[in-house]
Image (cartoon, rainbow, N blue to C red; front, side):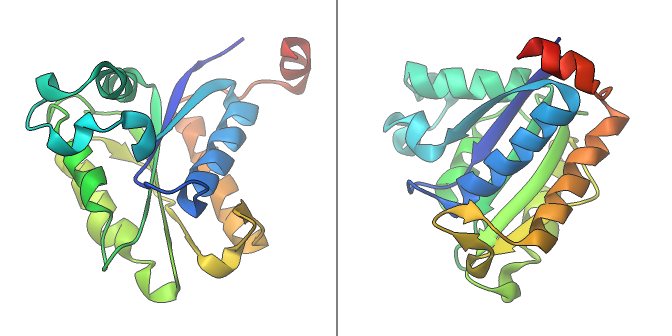
Amino acid sequence: MSHGKLVGLVGSFSRPSRSYALVETIAGLARDQYGLRPRLYDLIDLGPSLGNARRYDNLDEAARQAIEDIISADVLVVGSPVYKGSYTGLFKHLIDLIDPLALQGKPVILTATGGGDRHALVVEHQLRPLFGFFMAHTLPSAVYAADRDFADYRLVSEPVHRRAEQAAEELGAFFSPVSNHAALAAE
């Protein structure tokens, strides 16, 4: 039995992507623990209309559907590669097209990836205030991973994986865990 919809939003325009891999890892943990149904989007999924859109109405059907899924999600897992000390510009443009009240109270797990440790604070100094503006409920544990934490676009760092597990466990304030028996029956 599923307990809700999880949407992963990745501010990357590359495939494969370390940011996507990190969001996917956390989405999988949340699926396994709480029976959430994950759907992941990166900027490529939103199509070419995103860059030219001044308003939601300017988006093509694929981009509008992605925003509707983001708004209707029970939980968001958000991630972006760090570019010059912040999230990507097109990611911010997408967020700008969402109504300021649409994410109010929604639980959000924040993630970011970057070349090294000096970008780690982007989750606290950039992403947390952004989602604070929307009055979303950002979970206490954010997850940052550097390039060295991946091999072939898979998360391989045990400390980062433990942090991802911790972030997923914090969803327990919003969702009931699925029992192993129920999870096996669903397969």
